[in-house]
Image 1 (cartoon, rainbow, N blue to C red):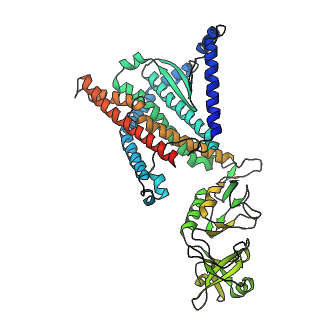
Image 2: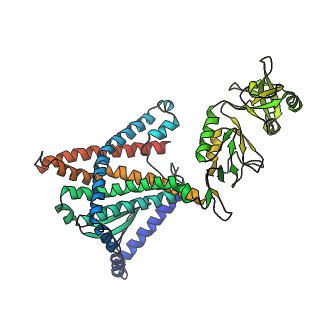
Length: 498
């Protein structure tokens, strides 16, 4: 749920801004000077919307738009081709997303879809702060939204100047809690240039968003190289945060700053290894440990075994914090059980799957008899003693935050690479999403103007009558608008309903 405190703060701030603006505009003494101040600074205020426009950056835009004209011409030609392809591709992507959303909404269908397939198929997803966007990551989200919007508008501005369209100014706005940017172009100039020139301008925004997303992907790939002078990689994962309810917390558990190098017999060199190993442990049978017959007899307690509801066997006191029920098969293939102190039973012992894996003839392969989804996981984080975790592997995955970057020097922050990684991932996602959504032929989006210019550039010889082209464009825009609205509405309902 969206935190109530966040709603109160947002509504309270906007109420204060609106009332202050209303009082100053209604005041006999301050009305004139206040409105002059707003106009001088390029500010305009309306309910839940603040807009700032300036001409301070005009010289910079004109400099960028007139430099290396031939190269810019080719650059925006590529952008035009990309924009047209993206416009038609957006129908496919939105259609695929809508079908997948409807499949999730049909009772019983979600059981046939694994969680991994759901995320792999979900190309676009509605994001709601406080529901599927953690509140502690709002800074990343809004910063990425603003940067993506600025880069988008810079593309429009430079392309417009390149096509000899007058540039009036650049601005930033805040709508409720969402930041954005815009450029003010002279409309008359836009209307008199050719459709191909218009296409270069209208496609430039999503083209720059696409390039920004590619640059983000490249930065993410090269991050280990960029941070190499300051951070090691490939030697394990560093624990950066533990959730308050994490089952890994304890006197012999994990601590912030621990370097994890192995889970069971699975070596860990990076974050992907950590996730892959936990997935493997979760879906494969519980691993066992070799123990000699003499040690087994020495450590075991008299037991009375009984079956749990899930079919597993329990043979220890339910309230024991140190003992676990182990199962093994003796030399005559009989299933036996022993209640053993877990650390002494598994520590420094060879892992195994069956008795034949144990090198000594007088040894057995014992494995913990746990509930169906629980696993005993030995977590190696030298120089500390191994942590023995019992529970669902996903609980360890979700409650322990890690990074593959290990500081070379003590004064370096362990959170810096995580912060950079997280921000770049948001930038890739949001810049890519802005490119896809803006390419949709939908009223009030870039896709509307891209479509109109494309039809004028390609169908003029086929349909000389403007009304026919306008009618075709209207129906395409209507279809795109309905498709986008359906995706947003159903996606929002799906997110909030869950």
